[in-house]
Amino acid sequence: MSTVVEHVLAAPSRYVQGRNVIQKLGSHLKSLGSTPLLVADDVVWEIVEDSLTKGFEEADLPVTRVGFGKFATAEAVDSLVETLRNGDHDVIVGIGGGSAIDAVKAAGHLAGISWASVPTAASSDAPTSALAVIYTDEGEFVEYRFFPKNPDLVLIDTVLVANAPERFLVGGIGDALATWVEARAVAKTRAKTMVGDAPTYTSTALAELSWKILWENALDALDAVRSRTVTPALEAVVEANTLLSGLGFESGGLAAAHAIHNGMTAAPQTHGLTHGEKVNIGTLTQLIMEGAPSAEIEDFIVFSTKVGLPNSLAEIGLTPEDQKEIRAIAKAATVEGETIHNMPFTVTPELVAEAMTVAETLSRRIRAEHGLPEPQLYQAEH
Image 1 (tube, rainbow, N blue to C red):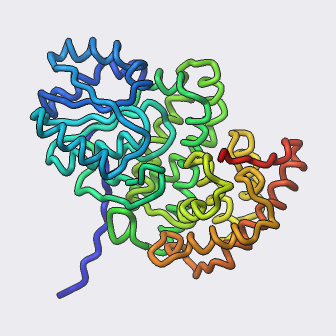
Image 2 (image 1 turned 30 degrees about the horizontal axis):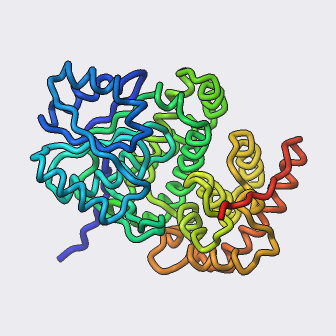
């Protein structure tokens, strides 16, 4: 039998973004089911309840909501499945952060019904994907769960994004900046993506478009969030963070940046940082390892500093002297099966540790040359 190689583009069935679109959630869900179950924690629910309820009344849908804890645990997923079956629900909706959305994906899959992602911040590219991250009650990584389809609906209200904490958008930018840097590496090797044997040209192009939009609009979008307003720049960045980066990472492939992020669980000093903040260190480390042009590395450090993302060891709680922790991160990032092995050259723990170590010197020199603030040591809460 001849070898089969699949180039797959995975995407949600429908993506909806814009001002006050939370009011239209009911009408969009109407085509998916008649007895939705809404999953949101108390803080999120207080923000969305009034706007959402009015839209549900207009769509003649019942409003049934259950709360959510902090993490998408196996127990939380199983509890949602039981609630779904007891209430005869035919669609489940995750509203809020990544863990609530991931738990909803997993529960919807197990119950065999439709599911929808309604993020209230543009803090990561997870809402569009066909995977969920499962944790322990303490927030330790347990497993990835992969599903045969993406969400039936992704809906993101840019008014909610404009009123969310600025750090959420910064983190989303950090996560999305990695997408093109990783996808272009995978394009060279034609390595496995999250959904196929090799990337599609479409997903690689979308990853690059996400990068371009962020460089043109990120700083203006952050100004919009500081002013709690929706501007074209914010709309552009929300789409880059959520849709373009989501399609780009899942179907374009991951490489070193996210593997180094995963390795940071080995260093307690980094705990408390957002996903995108840690990923940004991984992106810079990848650029150093692959010998990217010095001008590109310089531009990346200047830009990510202005955005408010860490690009030095100090900003993730480490120093070049913390070689034990750096080596532990490097070792965890290079275990068998990690996406770092999608790079177009052999990656060793030593290579990662050396690139992370030199990032501190690079960052301090470039920031000083551009009159930017020097890195400050991050202190993790214990």
